[in-house]
Image 1 (cartoon, rainbow, N blue to C red):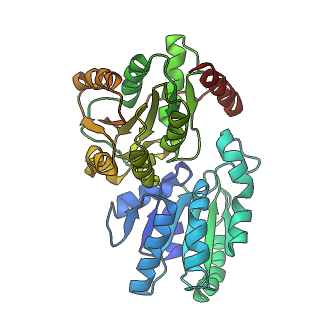
Image 2: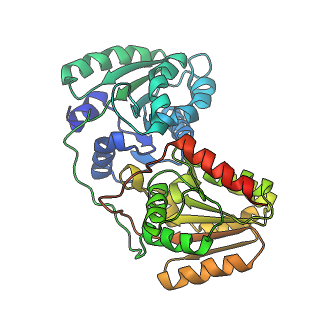
Length: 374
């Protein structure tokens, strides 16, 4: 169905969410109609953050908010949905729009498959009434579903539209860009050269895909890398766990701005532990690029200063290619917890591939390599 028709049927004037490629039509529509406007549209750090924002909106206005997200974000809403929104607690009505990655019967990447299987079940377990929209769902069917939902919402309960592949159409074209000149793939190629045979933990999305293809282009083994293909926001914590238990080995983490924002408390935990052999690199393009390019608030932040405030021993921010190699070589000369924020452009090769080894094989190869290290 047309995304504009869907939005009109819902009838809300406040949306908050974390972008999802399955919801690209909705995301682009909201950016075209509202942009980033705190009265109508906020892109939040994670789905729990969205849910709390929505609750605040309802408390202040009495109106019903909308939270959009990929189904991987269901885990982040469980606590606020159960202990804040629930009709057994504050009875705050919210409409969730959930992109159904890993939908049974529809091919998807391995990190989405199990999440796809339990998507509707998790909603039902949280007493959230769900209606599935596919590319064949008609406007009348959605109108009828919304009529039923209004009764549920009036009782202080929550509802969800679960969006299948290509469920929404006719979105405006939006170009997402910034003024940075370095590309992420170029940055990763330089990191690979600098890190040598050190272990690397990379974040979800295109960063891990580009790391994988860089190794292929170099004729290198993939055993050096742990590709965090899911679990957005947790790569740095995985890297900390590895670094603590391999203190004689430098460990590199390739992170992204959206991932850092999603679970920003990890910076404080890493800073408090001051693991001297950990190099934390945040490639910041100010965008949720892997799922479409919608902006993050990191484009307006100084992540290096935040890291220093959290306890990192050294943190710098760079935005020029001539600064990149110097920063990477300098960090190799130090034995202290370090962060490098690298500001880059939005965009990737159109023919960028995906890892061709299974996740379990990646884990086994990486563990065997770590075992061989001191």
